[in-house]
Length: 264
Image 1: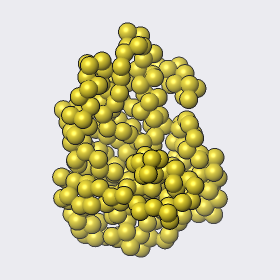
Image 2: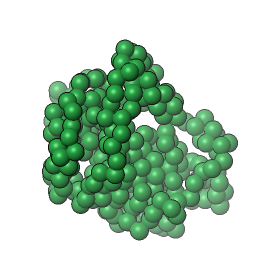
Image 3: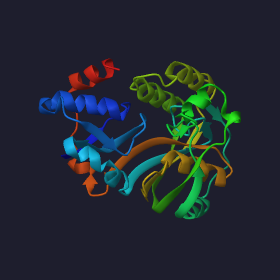
Image 4: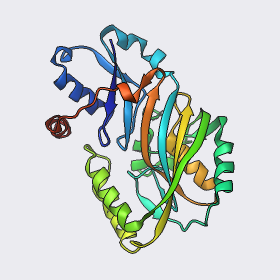
C-alpha cells in the first residue's frame, strides 16, 4: 500500500507516521516507512509505504519532486532555514534581473555540500551530531549531486523584523523534539529586537528537482551568488512523482496534532 499524506509544519516524518497510525487503526501493527524526508520546518507531500511496499522504498525515493519555497535575503543561519542560529548581514538591493540570473544559474546538475545540520552519516554518526559537538573541523563535509530541472519566481515581497519575530515564535513553537529551539529562539529575539523596523526581501519560487536536492542549500547558494546571506523561510512540497498535494491525506483534527506532539 502506498499513501500520500500531508506532513504538517513542525512535525518530523516519524511523527506523521505516528499520527497516521492513530487515524488508521488498521495500520497500527503494519510495517511502515516514508520515501523522501521532509525537515521539521517543511510541510507537504510525504509518500508513506505500508506492508510489502516498504521493500520498494528506493523506487519511490528516486521520484522527482516539486516545491514552493520562500527565500529570505539578509539573514543567514547554520541550518540555512529558520530553525538555526541566525546572523544578520545587510543585503544590497537585488534587482529582478540579478535575481533571474542567479536562479538561471541554479538549473542543471551540480555538486553541493550537504547542510551541516542534516542526517547524512559520516563515520557512523549523522552530520548534525558533528556540528553540535563543534567537531566539523575533524571531517570533510560530504557532497552530492543535486539536479534542478526548473526554478521560477512567483512573487517578491518584504517582511519587517517585527513580523518575522511572530513567524519565528509560531513556527519554531510547533516543532517537537530536540532541535535547539530554546537557544535558537533566544538568538532570533536578540537579533530582531534591535531590527523590528528593518525590511527583509522575500522571494517565492517554484522548484522542480531530482531526488536528494536540499532546497535550503539552493536558497543559501542563491544568496551567496547575490552577495548576501539567504535562508529558506518556508517550504511546501507540492508533489512527489505522481503524488500531488491536492490528494494528500491531512490531519485536520487538532487533538491528533496535540497527541502526536506530546508523544515525542
